[in-house]
Image 1: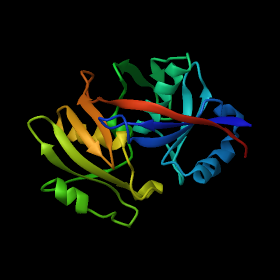
Image 2: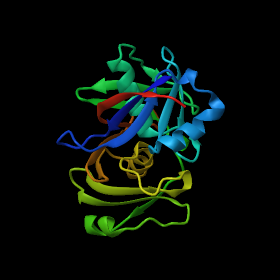
Image 3: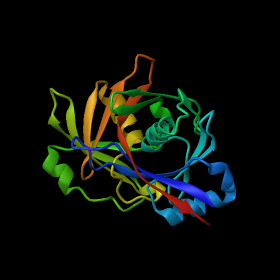
Image 4: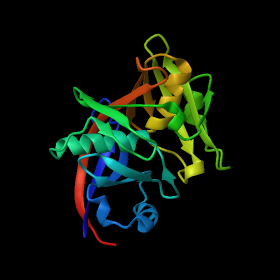
Length: 224
């Protein structure tokens, strides 16, 4: 029997919302060849299996595939490790080392957008057009967005990651990496029903920092 921690990552301004995430801190207890089936059965947009808590070595699965890097799973796992008394400065997903740290109520990662899934970014004319957008339905990986307040860097976004088995994602850190890189400036993303993602270019060449608030929702026993 393993323990599944369920978190909400990238909470909104009022502390609600965010994207649900499943994390097994004792991921090594679940065989690697069973992890895809476990992630599919749980149904979260991503599930994390931590193989080594001290080194933060981990795997990330959507219901359909494994990811080398993903934003909300890494932010959520970093938060959880710190809350459990084993904070780390570096996470080790398959993509390689990803720095992490806490700033006030937010947990951040610094990552290379080149390691993110290949989202196509579409700027629309206004937030109403973003609200009216529909999933492409062809397995495409798409983010649609529009400025709410361009001067302040606040924008509305929706993400449709059909290529990894998710119709629409509530809050997508990897897409935020790509959008921030494309815009070349700090941005405050309002995504999904009530989620907030902060993103900014890093001083390290080509890297982007993404962060937000996280809450642990529950712990529950999991038996395959």
